[in-house]
Image (tube, rainbow, N blue to C red):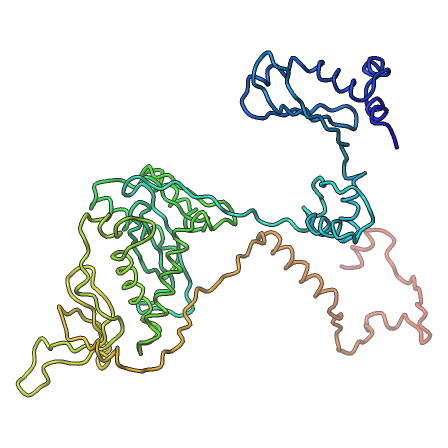
Amino acid sequence: MVDVGCLMLATMNPELQKQHEDMVAYEMIQNLKEIYEGQARHERSQEGESSRSITFGIYAIDVKLLASTSWVLDTIYKISTKRLKTNDSNQTYLWHCRLDHISERRISKLHKDGLLDPFVFEQMDGCESCLLGKMTKALFNGKGKRASDLLGLIHSDVCGPMNTQARGGFHYFITFTDDFSRYGYIYFMCHKSKVLEKFKEFRNEVQNQHGKSIKALRSDRGGEYLSHEFDELLKECGIVSLLTPPGTPQWNGVSKRINRTLLDMVRSMMSHSDLPISFWGHALETTAFTLNRVPSKSVQKTPHEMWTGKRPSMSFMKIWGYKAYVKHQMSTKLEPKSHKCTFVGYPKETKGHYFYNHKENKLFVARTGVFLEKDFISSEEDHRNIELEEVQQQQDTEPEVERFSQTIEENLTDLETRPLRRSTRERHEPERYGFLVTTHGDVILVNHDEPKTSRSSVGSRL
């Protein structure tokens, strides 16, 4: 057994070794306590337990203040020594590498069960190989600060393109949700380029209705929100743009959750209706209309009441996508007084309901109708499966220069592998100097009547 005093002396500098070479371990500890008595007096003035770590070489001494009741009483310390080990001399790290970088918790379990060779289990420093190979995204547990007034913060997100085109040629829709009241607006679009136009329409309506200005707009990093025109409009209106960090859709969780809720409700509504899937746009508008009038766990009252200051009425709401009889505006004495239609929504501009006439393939607004809701409850029709999803587009992040160079390389490779094209015409020897070539291929050199000077050459031509 190695004496503790010898181990402590081995880790001290020469000056401390001279002071403690004749002391036993207990005396060394008492002397070290006196050295740091000045620091301990300062710690005595603090309530509760305090601790301090003093390092000598490869050892660390933890000085813990256990009690401090008076300036006169001596302070009681609990002093322990532990060796500071890096991963180079850490047996836990060695087994971590031997066992293919398993977690430290699993190594601890193996160590406790006695399945590994005896060693002192200690915590490891960070493993760089694990950071490179197993690093995951940090958990998102943050909660943003809520707005304190209407239009203080607007959440927005674009959903689409959808796998089925809605009536009117729409493939996208954009939502705007007030953070304070959670009241939402929805607009349909044929293309994403209409985002700026829809935001102007939304801004003009809500600011005129409430007499307030939008303070901030939270959105993701979609290109439709990062355009120069959109950025200039926000600066001109004094609206702060709050963009989510890359790869963090949770920061725009309000809009993401609303989009998911909207589509889930639309699929449920259309499953018991015989309308074509292209009517998902009308179902989506009805869903947004309903969500604004029902309670939400995010607000104490309904969004409609917080947005308008009035309690919503539910008496006129009917089952979407089911049959109803609507009276003809004009009819003769012998014609039927009404026709059977399908209820598809609530108009924004007037009181009443939207109906769809199957025979005429036409939408119209009527103030009221006779809804066959009792037949719906008693019916046992099979529910159909609605496949309405957002098409996930793959983002092309490859720069244009790389694509261009790759095209050139492919063309060069194609030229290298392509066989040479040779003419199939018959080749004939020229007849101009054929008389100077012998049958053996020899060329006869002649020097008859060749001009010697330029004057003689000109004269020969005359």
